[in-house]
Image (tube, rainbow, N blue to C red; front, top):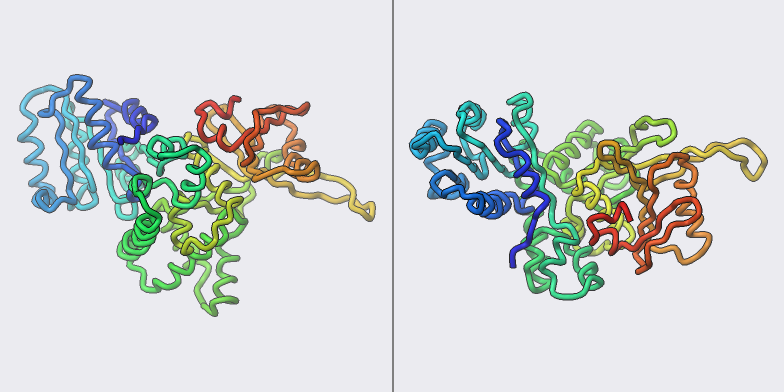
Length: 417
């Protein structure tokens, strides 16, 4: 069964013929090649584009190894462009092409060529092209399957689907596997044999154990406030390592560049400014995070927060961690200032939403705690609490909306409910 990825198809359609190189990025095995070579190709055919005007080259295929030479591939492409009609050029795993910048620069100057490329994210980063072409590269970032996309192929109800999704994540191939053993082996091997090896090879890392230890630290502390200095302290106190804070910072950047983790900066809502560190790190796929820890630390509260973060990002929002300062009196009657946290501040153009992830609110006290930061924001943007419980969408006297996780993830307009 084909998994529809309409959002990303529309993202590409909206960039057609814009005179820029379309760069499809994302964590490895997230479906970049499938999006371009299967879904988008089928769309072009439906629009009447003939196969002779779609030039698709998978550079990682051994049969195409001769096209990794820049002169050979340019000569080959030019030989296929026999008229003045529009041609669509797909290059998969373009990092395998020698001097790919020169090749892309040549293609972009062809008036009747519309160019689309993908690459293994840890070797070919969007910023390489975006920097090289100074505004002539246009990125489409593809995420692992959202819960809604995952449910297209899951044979069961949404409750069992959630249990599966929060454990094994949303990499497309994982979603089609039948047994737990298959999924565990696939995710574990993928992390060890693909992601880590790619980073080590790209950046010529010698202290590989420290990189692996860092990944474990980030995985164990998913959604917790931290920074490179704190992580360095952990290395020194727990692992007796003399790793420098600059090395830790650099390794984290490598993981971000490879789309394995993503950071959420802290934002002072009332002060309207970024605070800096500490900040939070979330994994692009919770299944990979769980695999990294041997499926031993599966705290659903933290994983649910990670999934909500990824959902907001996949919808195109920039996402920060909100901080709200509240002044009051201490028990001793002294003036004090407290910092309250809003899990997520999601922005897209003029839109803003405050989203709180609350696994459950079984008591009035818990409800009060979850609402406190939202009540002290003081602006008119929508404020939402997402709970794991199956509840109807409600709105209290202060305008705070409470909704079920399933409504939030499965309804495209959930932020407007």
